Length: 154
Image 1: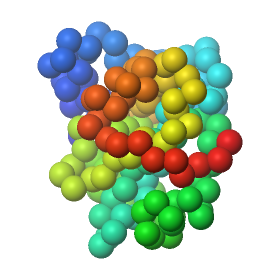
Image 2 (image 1 turned 90 degrees about the horizontal axis):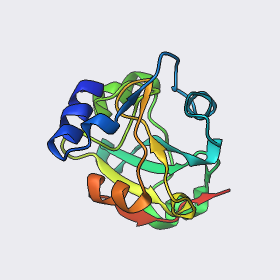
Image 3 (image 1 turned 180 degrees about the horizontal axis):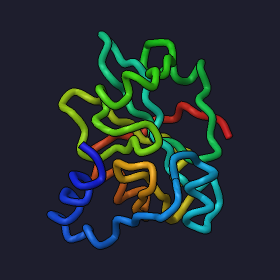
């Protein structure tokens, strides 16, 4: 998977032209904010965790948010354990720096964190370390089919 599959997904819903590709890296929150000319908080970072029974749980948060371990455990019933780099591509279908909540392998659970709701639009990656798309939080919910949680502090 990767940017071509994500672009194809957005093309099917007439948003393919909205996928942005940069000549510079957007693999981290700060690099993505620089590439987009926006504040770091508006970057929708996709954090990959071990889910129940060894699966993958993807939590999309605002760029300035940090996972609150107590909230995470209370919400998901498990300890927050991030995937190691070598398992990320295998379990999410996207490389580190390009992990996004679109075009995921079956069984990946996606949740959107409430920290994103304070912005009119946010910028999640699109399957590569130099891509993004601008979406409202409602569009992000619609295009991912994810539900909202509150597992961060900022």
